[in-house]
Image (cartoon, rainbow, N blue to C red; front, top):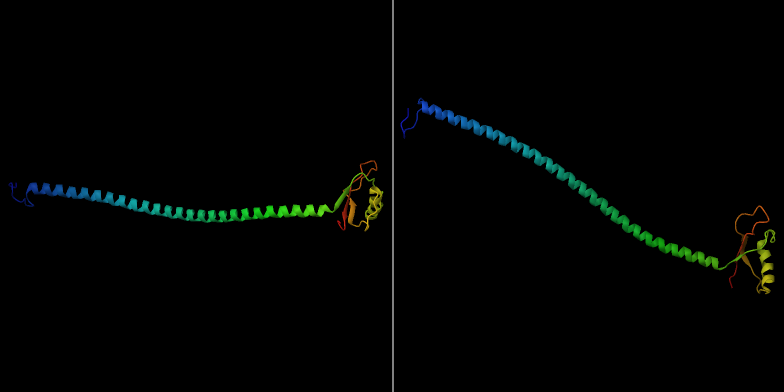
Length: 168
């Protein structure tokens, strides 16, 4: 047995207990180190997975940013085109109105009175109708009835549209 204050020798029974205790502690520390090593490995794997997820989110964010940029550009283009379309519609309406200014619509003239030459018919009808002799005589670019011919003569006569050659 070892004396207090003396160093135990390997043959001493208390030394072997102390050695046994130390070995158990070393084994316990080794187990804890292995557990910590496993936890660190798990953390590294989780960290790698998180990095991969973050990279995926970054790629998705970049793709969404690109799509947003494209949509914003398309919206700006559509807005510009809408403004241009409104302008063109206004111009078309104005041109249609200008082209209709020289037109005359006549209602209630019985069908087949004009035979096949509606222009000549109107050149003789209008001076008689208004009681005025036009100088120069009326000239028309075109004159025609609107719509398809009626099958029955009892139907309401189709209107005639006449477009003056010279609007003066």
